[in-house]
Amino acid sequence: MTRLAVMWVHGVEIADDRFADTSMNLLREEFTRIAGVDADEALVLRTAFWAPVYERRQDKLLRRMGGQRAEGVFDLLDALGGATDRGSVAALLGLVASGLVRNLPGSPEFHFPTLRWLVVHYLGDAISYQAGAVDRTLYDRVHQVLARSLHDLATEAGPDAPVCVLAHSLGSVVAGNFFYDLQVAAGLHPDGSAGVAPEVAAELGDTPAERGETLGWLYTLGSPLALFAQRHPDFGTPIAVPHPELERLHPHVGGEWVNVWDPDDVIAAPIRPLNDAYARAVAEDRSVAVGPWWLGWTPLVHPFYWNDVRVVRPIATQLAMAWHRLRVTAG
Image (cartoon, rainbow, N blue to C red; front, side, top):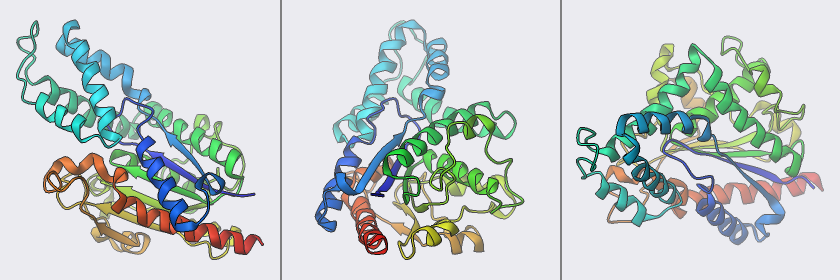
């Protein structure tokens, strides 16, 4: 029986492959409650953990910048970052507090190590990934990770399983590029990118799901897409969500692209105003106040999107409706 396939694509500062554990559990709970069906019977969940593509280079850079004595500090920051992305407020406060430390013993000129760690991860990931415009090596290695996750989803959920993607921060740019390349390969964007690299294609089977034809739901969370769109004339061309083939494969199953942003998150922004194509492609720029109330008025809300029920519940509702429609059309 075909199930719904759900993929989580993380952003920067991730060093823990359990980054989506809290979000997955929350989606399971909400889906089961709304659909009246055990989520494990209806959904197949996978992460696309692409951080290791850059991790070794970034660790080497930080060691060279801060010296060997800084390694333990950076390991601690990695652990706090991973816990933050699983929704830990205490870990986030630990990161904030460590940002006040000006220097480390033994590294007197390496000032503000936490802020430098953030810069290396935040800017380093973005710079390295976008270098793909010149040298596609790292760009394609990241996309190989997404391709393997999509292959796993198609194998377990079904070759024509409808696909939902939750993409946070830089992950929304990564997911957008990955599915855009698939759509270019299918001829949807004739003036688009170079398409899917051979090493990425090698990770994918020849199924509708792995060709991106069953992409139905895209939720960009805390997305910097508006910033990255500056690279393109008139801010570029968005991907098609849902994919035009989805209606043929699964009539009336639905689909939407919703961009979720918190006005206090300085990384995120609405994307429908970018141009007419985005206004047509994106169903809604959904403003949601995320994070605990006492932190929700600050830019520190950025890590909390997919761990917040106010974000996840509408997604679970859409998937619950899709599941019941899928059963009707299949039966």
